[in-house]
Image (tube, rainbow, N blue to C red; front, side, top):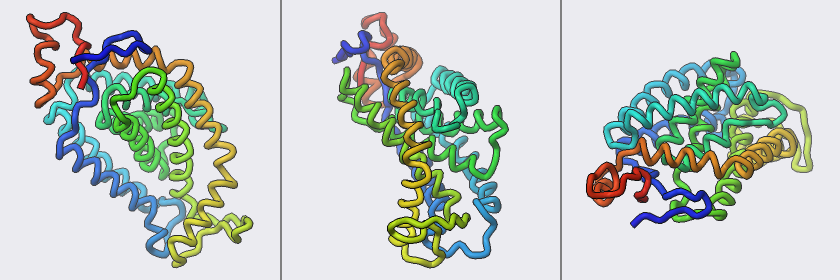
Length: 301
């Protein structure tokens, strides 16, 4: 039975279509690839390699592109995406790509991508949010001439944000839901900053010192020691500045615009989404059925 959301004042739509094994296989494979590409210097000494992934980043990017295509095919095959959802994906990618350079493209921590990414992942589900992270960053890089060795890592980190937003508990609603999204936005802002620090930190010599000693990467050192150095490096160089700015702008945008934007996205989700499997059989009398309601956004998974 459907349950209306009094906080958004709209019926709760069919959202978050369950991901099939094909989609999960692609997500796990791309996530494993990204984590290894980011963290391999912690496992193997990074000695005599080109700085800041300039040699391996093109290969990571080349591996990600077919994975994104396979993910789209898997989602369409399993019913997670249909033609309308793909159209919405294109529109939201274009909106994010246009907003990012207009509002600073991450300058001083001002970041507009996460706000829409989190809401879209919440409304359309984890597979959609994962894809939107890839496409938003890629389109934004093309517009801002931001194509470089950092791009595949930005795409992966943004995709993980959208995926996490889609995996948040579905039962939460109203003000608690908005508070959950704000908390997730703050956490993802700091996590994104830390991961983007990791892509270049092993390849630079900062000469910085902290209470724990040098902040530089030490090839061949135990993982725990290098992680401690990296933690201090992140804390002193980005946590209080760029990452906090990203957390503030994301949370402020969610508080001010989260309600209306989520309402619009959920209406689009209810109209554009076709439920599959058991969910589709349970909700078939509500969606497009002459014996059910004329409102296409009355079912909830």
